[in-house]
Length: 157
Image (cartoon, rainbow, N blue to C red; front, side, top):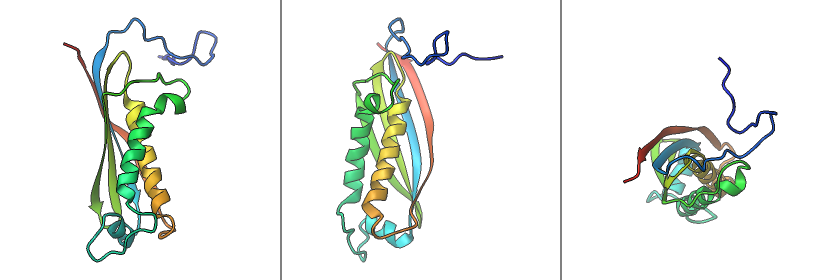
C-alpha cells in the first residue's frame, strides 16, 4: 500500500496542508534529546558546588528560553508548518548519567493541527544552545537521540 504524503499535491508539488475543515483539539507533544558532555562540563553546567562557572554564564536558563522561543517560531523555521499560537511550552533538564543530560520539551495548543514539530524544534534548539554555551570548555560535545516521545489529542469542551 502506498500512502500519499500530505504535503504534496496531486502533481507532487510541495504544499501546506489545508486544516480548515478539521475541528480544534487539545494537542500536546513531548520530545526529548540527550546532551552529551564530559562529567566536569555537566558539573559546571549544573552549578555543582565545587565546579567553576561556565564562561558564558547560566547556560540552562539561556537554553530554556531558547527552546521556548524556538517552539514559538517553528512556523517560521519549517517551511510547511502552520504558524501556531502555543498555549504552553516547557523545557526540562535531567542528568541521567555522569556525561548525559536529558532535555525534554513539552508543547501544547488548542488547534486544528499538531504540535509535535514545535516540541521537536524546542528540544533541538535547547540542545544546540547548551552546545554553544559549553563548546569553549569541552571539544567532545554531542547531541543525540532527538525524537518524539508522545503526542496526544483530545476533544475540546
